[in-house]
Amino acid sequence: MADATHAPADPRKRLGAAGETLAVQKLIEAGFTIHARNWRCRAGEIDIVAEEDAPDYARGLAAAPWLVLVEVRTRRGDAFGTALQSITPAKQRKLRTVAGHYLAATGWTGPWRIDVVAIQLDRQGHLVEIEHVKGAVLG
Image (tube, rainbow, N blue to C red; front, side, top):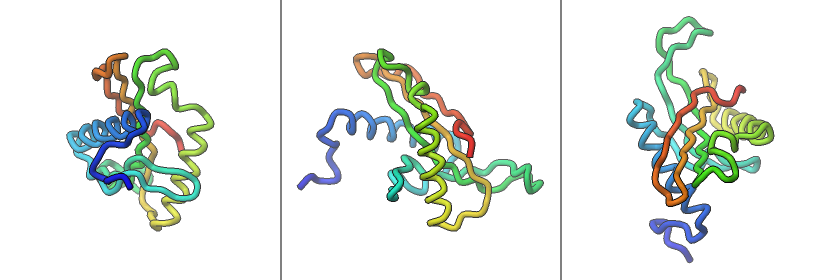
């Protein structure tokens, strides 16, 4: 049985876990509060569940807690496209479906959005860029 403190054996999972750790660091530096990682339901997974205080224009509030569901995409090299390019229309549909499950499961009624943190590494695995796109997937 694998110990939860060790990195996953699968190189793709290891790359994804490393990317999620970088994304969490970036979000915390930007003032987000992290509530959960790898939230799962029958429809899929949310990589990071976070909260950010931001204006809620719909309710006329200068600041309100926003639920932020974050998809992390990590790519080594760009032979198969960049991290951002991997957010296909099908992936966006799946993210919206999983978000609906999360909202139903938690009863969240405040403002929310789906962000993407795209992490681009070079072929040797060195960090090239971390890009945080707020509201990348429209609900």
